[in-house]
Image (cartoon, rainbow, N blue to C red; front, side):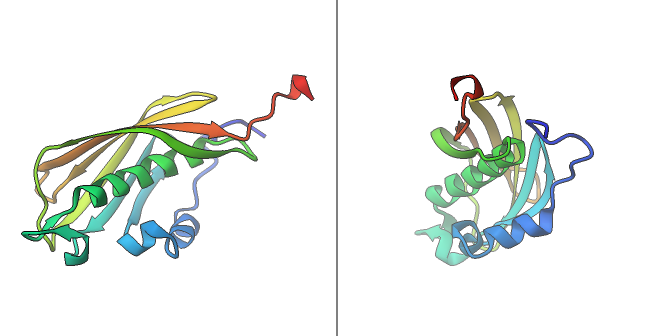
Length: 149
């Protein structure tokens, strides 16, 4: 079995969406749009319960949206039996997003290594206005050194 998906290993978007739906990303309303080994795209409707005062998306909600996409990208690249966790995340807030806005998160792989992966997510409005850029590092857990066993 290869360490990473290959071009003929198409990710099952509906199955992954079903996995997310009962979890926090589903509670937030994250909707997957496209999946690839080096890119994950999703949408999030800015609801009033995801906002801070003034009806603007809460920064934590933007960060959670981006973190979800980077984690999904990493999961798509994990070898069998491995799992992942975020070790570092940096967010640059550029502009607010009002309630009712449908945001697109576009997460691209900057590094897909054996022990870490780095993803950068741009969150934009339908008009293309940049709201936030999030860069995160994902640690690959659960790999066993076969030479040691």
